[in-house]
Length: 199
Image (tube, rainbow, N blue to C red; front, side):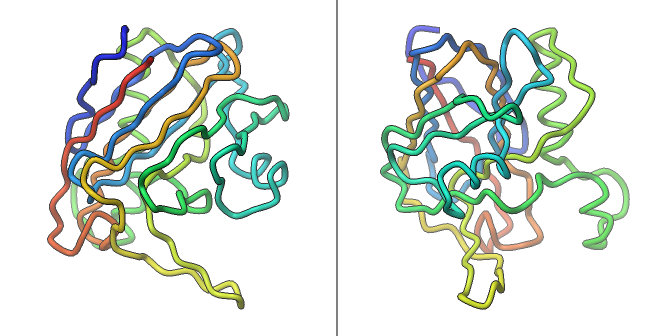
């Protein structure tokens, strides 16, 4: 991939490989779309970007430009090098899955980030046995001093983006979150495509 923008389809997922030193740009094309993100060591898929280890590393609930996410083996994997989104990208909430939608009253199947992750990786011939926590790009989860959380509406402008530097050879997976019940993708319930590039 030579820097061209790739579509993450609305309610779907995409995955790609990146080499150490390359940059991964994720664009919130319409400004209202959460993108769940995962990264895996290309040489050992049991090593992945860890939200809990990353929070312990940069000692914050959300990363800022210059902060490095680490793996479940405490190794650097992605560094946030640019951010025009005005978001505190969420590191707390689990990716949505079919059980979550059942708890929200959905009957039958609902597209979800967990399945998007596994499907996107399968398209690269990659299989993982677990579903790691996601980095929820552009997701607005306000918190209060007493630890209360809320489902916030989007604040990223259309075309807002983040850029990460790969700190190892990795596989990245991205899901345009299909959540249309809670307001994280806006109160209209409309989910949209997003875009990314490996540079």
